[in-house]
Figure 1: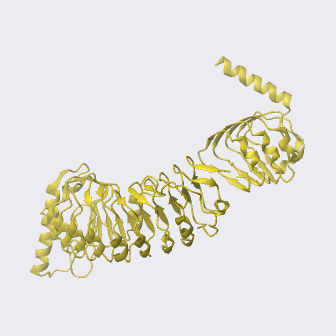
Figure 2: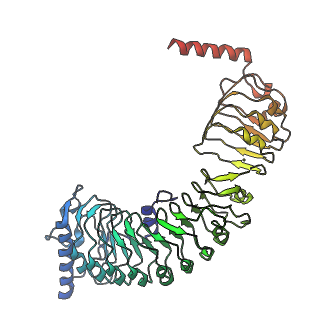
Length: 485
C-alpha cells in the first residue's frame, strides 16, 4: 500500500456517493404497530452498540438513550423518505471508539450503509451481518478487528462496496465473495490473510472496479483480464510468484496496476513482456513494479503507452539493457524511479530532460555532457549543489537551460557562453560567483535570468549588475561581519 498515488481511505471516500450518517424519519402521525416495532428494534440495536463501546473519548454516544427517538441521536440527520423511519445509514467513522461490534446490528434489516472506518474496534466481524439483505456498503477498515472474514458476507446480495483493509484479519478470503455480482469495490489489503487470488472473482464479479487484496500467495490468474471494468488492481506487497499475465491489456479502464513488493518474474528475458499489452490501457496512470524479480529488457516497441502515465516505479529489480526511447513520450510522467537495476547505455539520444520541482540532491553528474542530443534541460526547484558541469558547453543543441532555485556554487563555466542556439537560460536563485561571462547569450539580457545570485558581478550593461570591484568589497564586508558574530 505504501506505493499508492492515493490512500485506501481516500479511494473509499471518493467512491462513496451515498450520504452517510442518515436516519430516515417519518413525520406522519399515524404509524402502524409494525413500524413501531421496527423502530424499537433499531433503537435497541443502537443502545446495544453503545454498551459494547468501552471507550468513547469524544462523548459521541452520550445522547444515545431510550428517552428519545433514535432519529434524534447526536450527529444523525433525519430525512423523510417514504413512510419508514427505520435505520438505513449508520456512520461511526473516525471517532476513536474502542469496543466490539454487537451482533444486534443484524436486526436493523433496513440498513444499507455501515461505515465504522478509523476507530479502534476489536473482536470479530459478526457472522450475523450476512443477513442484512439490503446492505450496499460495509466499511470496517482501519480498526483492530481479528478473526476471519465471515463467509456469510457472500449472502449480501445488494453489497456494492466492502472495505476491510488495515485490520488484523486472518484466514482465507471467502470464495463466497464470488457470488456478489453487484460488488464494484473490495479492499481487504493490509491484513494477515492468506491464499491465492481466486480466478472466480474475476469471472463472476462483472462490475468490479477496485480490487485491493493483500497477503496473497501463488500466481496472478490469467482470467483476471475478464474483469473488464477494473480501474484499480492492487496486489502490492504480497507473496505472488511467476509471470504477470500478458493479457492485462484487456482491462481497458485500468488506471492503477500495483504489483510491487512481490516475487514476480525470474530475472530472465521475457519477464516484462506484459508491458506490451498495457499499451491498450490508455487510462493507466500508475505502474509500481518495484521490488520484484523482473529481469530482461524493457520492451522497445511500446509507442502507444499511455500518455496519462504519471508514476512508473521500476526500482529494485534486475532489469537490464538500454533505457527505451518511449520513456520520452510519457508527457504526464512526474515520478520515475529506476535505481538498483542493471541498465546500461547514461541516455545519449535523449532530447528533453525535465526533473523540475522534486527533491533531488547532490551534484549533477558530468555524464550529462555525453547526452549530445539534448535540447531542453530543466532541473529547477531541487537541492542540487556543487558547480555547474563545464561540459555543458559540449551540448551544442541546447535551447532551454533552467537550473534555477538550487544550491549551485562557483563560477559559471566560461565556454557555456558559446552555445549557439540558446533561447533562454535561467540561473536564478543559486550561489554563483563572479566573474560573469560577457559574450554570447550573456550579452543579451532577454536570454538569461540571474536574479537571486547576490555574489555575481560584471557582465554586460543590460544585466544591470554591480561592478566586480564594488561587489568584491561588499563580499569582503559580509565575511568580516560573519567572522565578528
